[in-house]
Amino acid sequence: MATPIRKFTKLSFVIILLISFLTFLKGDELGELKRSSMTLYFQDYFGGPNATMKPVTFSADAWSFKQFGTIFCTDDPITVTMDQGSAEIGRAQGIYVTSALDGSNSHVLISLVFTNKEFGGSTLEVQGASKQFERVREVAVVGGTGKFRLARGYATFETVHLDLSLSYSIIEGNFTVWHYKNDRNTL
Image (cartoon, rainbow, N blue to C red; front, side, top):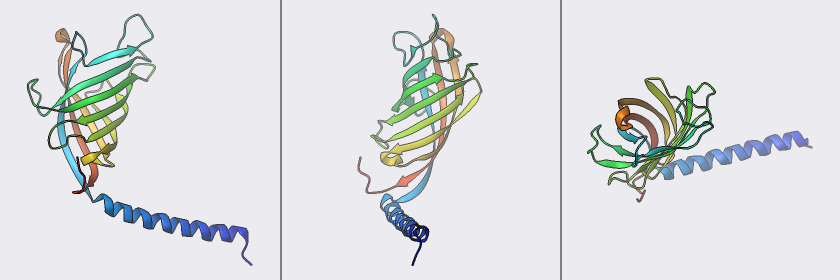
């Protein structure tokens, strides 16, 4: 007579095999795993009447990127080149939170919402701690939809232009992602 532990072990093994088999079948439905790399430019206006990034809460009379607890909301245009007149291919929408007591890190939660013909309707989801005062910052790509279904990877950000008098900066984003390419995806 089998002991309860042996029955449980056999049942666990069968369940693991079943899950593995179903995952294999589901992976086939998703299509081929593909690696994509792209460079995009975030046109960031952090002041003035047409600001695309604003503080929404802060713990002092004046907001600051260094002030612990400050939360910023963003909706930056994403372009294919550094030029302000470059074609817009999407929007970077989300929040930044100054999450380190000394102001050195911000936590980034950003959705890249693509609007161009090639990727329209697709998204990439970016999340992680960003060492906001370093020249190059790296965060994780934790997901995606549409053409970037189940994306994973990383992104680096570098401020390549800063004009404090205009409250304007250009941030270069370099993305390396693995995602499923499925010709049956309809967008």
